[in-house]
Image (spheres, rainbow, N blue to C red):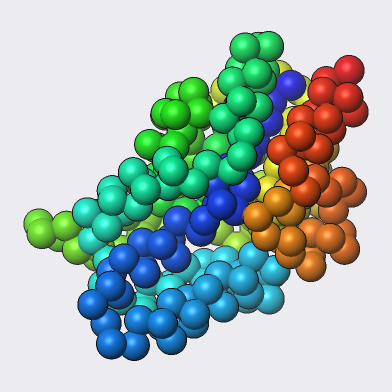
Length: 226
């Protein structure tokens, strides 16, 4: 079995890019209003109301962010791993299942958590960026398969072509871009995770929804890996 985990609001309880932008806005007099606006853009993207790439662009336009902001949030997110997700990942890996993280977030902020979860860096697929000499973000790698409006499907297809991990393939996540992997037949199973964010698109369209990590574990070991 190969499990593809979403990162934001799934493996961790936060939205990593939103946290990066909030840090960049720390000294702004309009910080509260700006961070609320960023969260609203995120929700629209996760519900599929606006294209994912547009969601990223709109959020990054709110404040100048740096590589140092992404690094700081990566360390902070290690304190916000969803309860019992570390134990679940350890059990999956111990039992010989392949675990990947696929995220529309940025790799710099994800790798510290992945290391704690025991997920190898090669199994982390996420967006990347370019910076100037002072570390200020100058652009997003638009050729990265994670920077797409077609959900996680292109990423999973790229992983399968490159590595041929064992079936069945399972996607776990909280957003429309995660659900797209199942609705496009890129994966065999999908479980929406609503333990941190209960999004309407998941509650209405996902074939299975878990509200806790224990429920997710039961799904993986009782309904998939049987």
